[in-house]
Image (cartoon, rainbow, N blue to C red; front, side, top):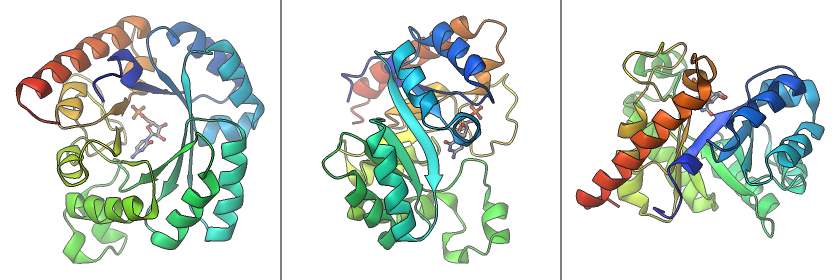
Length: 249
Ligand code: C5P
């Protein structure tokens, strides 16, 4: 996994409402990050054409279609086939409906280069939020729920999971290197956490075993987004070196 360069481990979400804004950010950051993430806001506003436009503007970057699918298996299977047809590199599905849905998704991706990632527990959720949502108290520690859902994703054939940097080490320890870990909720000490609750720094997330980190507002709202992305790459590089020295993964 260390073959991926530090900057290519940064996933930048295009969380803006118009193609012009999105493509402006792609132009600015295409030499500083490896993956552009198209999520609910941009895709709802622009539809599939924006995927093509991002690819055309940044042919060297990967594209992550973050739809976080959540419906009955047959419906999601159909949607996943359309997503794979757009030749995106990653697509997400929620894990909390269990194996049937996850299996439908991996079947829909079979034979395409698109990788299905299972969203375990959103990084905007705390232990209290899980209890309020009616999650079984035996999973009240988010790490135990992340692990439970990661097991479902793995058995169903997902390429990896999305979880916070706080849980990356237990996921990595259980599944080894051949399972992708994507970590949002990235914040440095002086960043505003916003709606994110289970946060780690870029350094911690990578040291704990994340393959990729999702960094949105800390780059987008920085006075100089290019500099912010460069700083994060250096942090990733340092974490990768220390990960090796520690003998982790
Ligand atoms: O860094 P920032 O908080 O701005 O990142 C927000 C982005 O991270 C959004 O695009 C959101 O969809 C994504 N995200 C995610 N999984 C989570 C939490 C956030 O993909 N668990």
